[in-house]
Each structure stands twice: as structure tokens, then as C-alpha cells.
Image 1 (tube, rainbow, N blue to C red):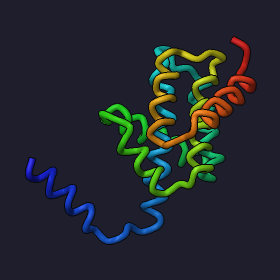
Image 2: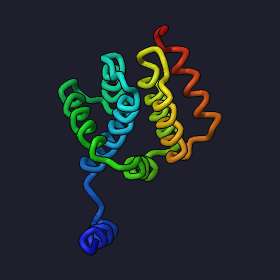
Image 3: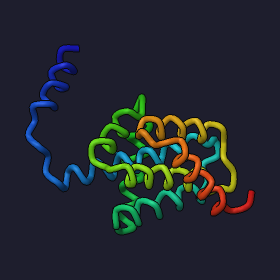
Image 4: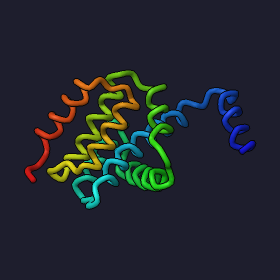
Length: 153
């Protein structure tokens, strides 16, 4: 317990991280949220994975091998994570409202990539949107746009 508390206090006193490390943390946080949407559906399909990879490639301008490594790391990290706060707090500190809304849009695209929305995916979406302080109207607009662009089930 004391070690965890010490690590927390040290993190507040730590000097500012270099921009490359910060960018990597934001990429990982975004990737973990996309992976969490995939994991919420009991039947993870190729369409969801491809959509997540495309989203990361376009949002962060990454090469295919970088996206592959990022998805692998995000999958491992998501499996070990116990909540979303760690990831959403990073995005809240670094992203403005339009960039956070873009993450929600990408998550909706992953959720609808297989043509239907599973109840667990909807739960993850609502929880993350709340943690990112996304207004409900924007949340619904992003959802409807993703559903309109989704393949037929």
C-alpha cells in the first residue's frame, strides 16, 4: 500500500514527460477504449478489428505495423485494466472536446462494424462517454451516424 501511495505522489512530482511518450500514451489510451468496445461483444469479428485498426491508423497517422503493435499492446493492457478512468483521464487532460468526441465516434464505428450493437457494447459506450464528459446530444449524434454507416445485419 505504501509503495502504491509513493508511486502516486511521485507521479505528481515527476517532470513533464517528453512529447513522444505523451503521444504514445494517448495512442494507447485511445486504442484500449477501442479494444474494450470489441471485447464487449462476445463474438469479436474481423470487421471490428479492421475498423479499430483503420481508426487508429487515420487518427494517429500510423503505419500498418505500428497499428498492429498498438492493438496488441492495447489488448494486453485492456485485459489487465480494472476500469476506464486511467485511460479517459489521460484523454481528458490532453484532448479538447472535439477530439474526445472523435474518440467516441470511432468507438461507435467499432461497435457497429459487425452490423449490430450488443448490449455490453452500448454499456461501455455510455460509461466512456460519461467519463469523457461528452454531452448526450453529441453522444446520440455520433451513435446515429455510426449506425447509418454500418453494414446491414
